[in-house]
Length: 166
Image 1 (cartoon, rainbow, N blue to C red):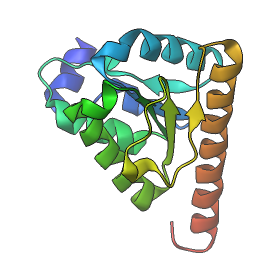
Image 2: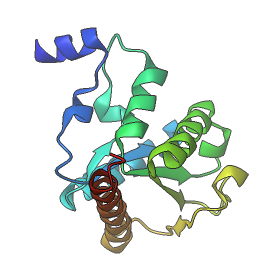
Image 3: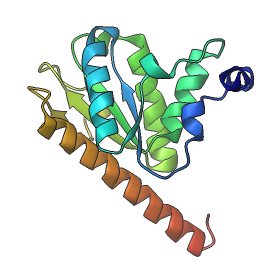
């Protein structure tokens, strides 16, 4: 019943989690779903609240609006770069939303290179993580980056509030 209310209001319940911890949006192509789910589970074990469309779908909501809200609510936008993802119209749209959120709110953008495919040119200015194997060390590095982004955004918010800009 409660999820029906969220769907009616077009609000993703995952976005209502208090800012008690770092949030990440995981962008990926359907062909990379197994990797995205593995990353989601690993990040949860590191205290990160990931948003992955596989587990966050709300029936009856507009997909693009739901994605835009989730990207804007994240501290880190993680995009899995592969041959499949650079061809995906949805991944391209999510990257556009992330670039806007980066400029507007400082959302960190973290391209993760999976199969040697280079990041799209729009992501070239951002440091990338190259992952050959999905092991605990890779997930821990990505989790650490998410925690750092969260801390930086919290400091920026506190500084903005104390200077009267918040």
